[in-house]
Length: 207
Image (tube, one colour):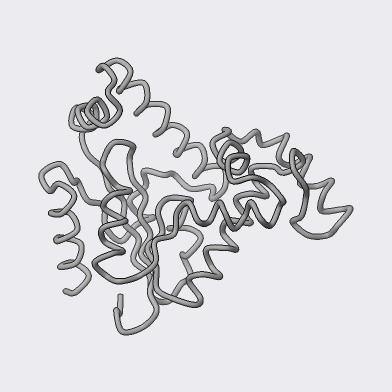
C-alpha cells in the first residue's frame, strides 16, 4: 500500500476485539477519514429514512427470499436501487452503503470499518484488508467491562454479533468471513491493546 496515493484500509473484526477503536485510532494517526456510521447517515438521506431506521434495518439479519422479492419488484418498476421507508431491503441498503463508501474513497484516503469492506474494495489498486481476532476469553472480559454485563451475557453478545457478521458477509459477498484469503493481514490483538495494535499496523504499512 502506497501512502503517497489515495488508499483504503478495510478492517473486519470479531466482536469484542476493540476493532472499532483500533480502526478509529489508526485513521486519526494516519490523518484520514473513518468510514462507519456516517455511511448510514448518507444512505438514510438517500432513502428518506431516519438514521435510526437505517441502523435497525442494517442490524436485521437478511432473509434471502424477502430481499430478492422486494429487490426484484423494485428493480422492475424503477430499474434502479431505489425505494422508500419500509420497502427498503437489507440488500438494497448494502448496495447503497457500498456506493457511498466508494464515492468517499474516490475522493480521499480512508479507513473502513466492517460492511464487507474487504469485498467492496477488492479491486481498489491501493488497499489493505485487515481482520482482527482474539480468543473468546479475552473478548468476554472486554465485553463484561465495556457493557457492564456478566460472563454469560457477554458470551451471548459475542456469539450473536459474530454470527450476524458471518451471515451478513456470506449473504452479500458469497465468501466466508473467517477465510484469511480475504485479507492481507489477520492479526491476533490479544497482547497489543488499542495503541499497541495501531503501532504494529502503522509499522506493517510502512514496511
